[in-house]
Length: 240
Image 1 (tube, rainbow, N blue to C red):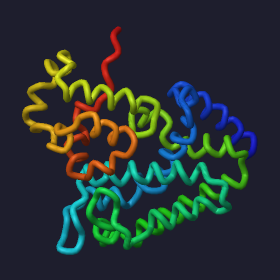
Image 2 (tube, rainbow, N blue to C red):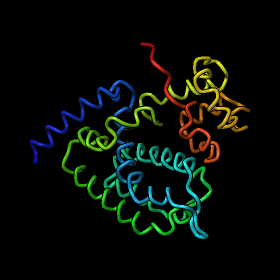
Image 3 (cartoon, rainbow, N blue to C red):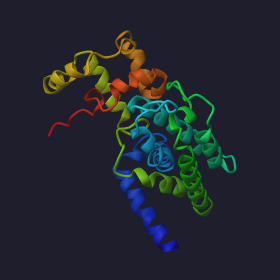
Image 4 (tube, rainbow, N blue to C red):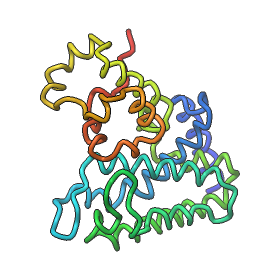
């Protein structure tokens, strides 16, 4: 197993290097935070709750809510991975499974959004955290970050905190200001169907852009719903 793990570490470092993770400050820690959130939270029973219709007891969980929740949790995972506290991953577990605290920017709690799936979510989160904690004890600190980052290798390079996120945000601001004619020519019809940007964005584009860059959940789920899967936030085309 040791030889296989060492081989996996070499492969992981190579792939993360190709993603540009090592070329930016704290890039590996951000990638590890993404990997943790993806494995422990995002790719689990919460996806079933996200896809399910709301009920009289469970609130709807549209893309904007998931956008806010996932980015906030990624920030918490990033901070946890920068901590030297023993059993730090179990602090993240408690944070994720807290049923009573309102999710920032979302207007509801885990109980509100996950009712009917709470047991499955808890089982999944605890199992994944235990797995990561086991490998954290086995590996050197930087190797653990590589291991934690593995679930998102090849994906999410343009998501919050990842190397291309600042480029995507800057591209979105240029498009919102009407400065990207090629984008408007390509996507103008779709943007009209989606509808205008929320007032909170257009009232102060620079402030909205700073929040989008550093703490998207502070814009609120309704605003993030407009950005979710919206081409305005896609990375710019690279000239051939």
